Image (cartoon, rainbow, N blue to C red):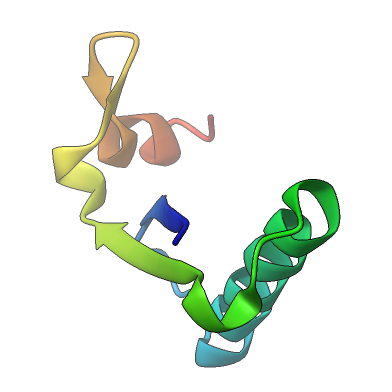
Length: 67
């Protein structure tokens, strides 16, 4: 019973793109490890850019600088 957790910043990812991520992760586990798609769980967590840091700075600050 695989469990996949995808964490992304909440920067406008559409429901269609989320569905594509869920389908892709499920297919990957099926194709590579032979896992049953019916028992594969995929959860997408969206994180505020103020709550995600890289290199000592928030993603909000990095985005404002164009990085």
